[in-house]
Length: 162
Image 1 (cartoon, helix red, strand yellow):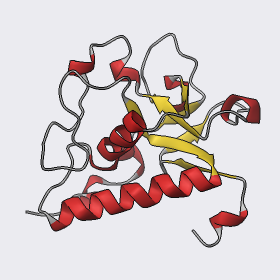
Image 2 (image 1 turned 30 degrees about the horizontal axis):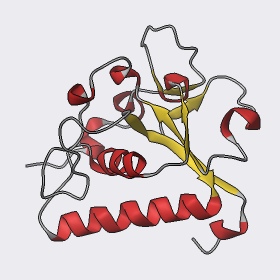
Image 3 (image 1 turned 120 degrees about the vertical axis):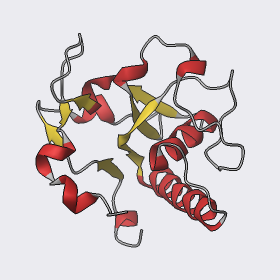
């Protein structure tokens, strides 16, 4: 946070994100919105009750049925520095509080991000082009392709032995 606070904007992209197209600042940055998130391709035109929100009341990421607007990907988000730092600090606090209570949100940080965005009024929603799954076929133009993690990192290095 100390180093980032000197910047105007900050963005998070999963390590398996591959920039496939030139992305102009006008696409991401706006004077009117504080944060930017990308819609998860798997939940376009779905009913909110089909979104994989965390339905566990014990989690800080809890979103009840019949609530919600959009399902966003945890693989890409960003924005103006002060709101961005508040976002990541809140996600860290909520995740840590869950862990202290023996709870892990359904989709980990993505679940917490969706809860935050649900309650945050001032964000820009990008298309799934910015979190496009490798090998997927849709009408969206891939700008950032999320490469298959298993092709980048050997599974034995990321999974714990029982």
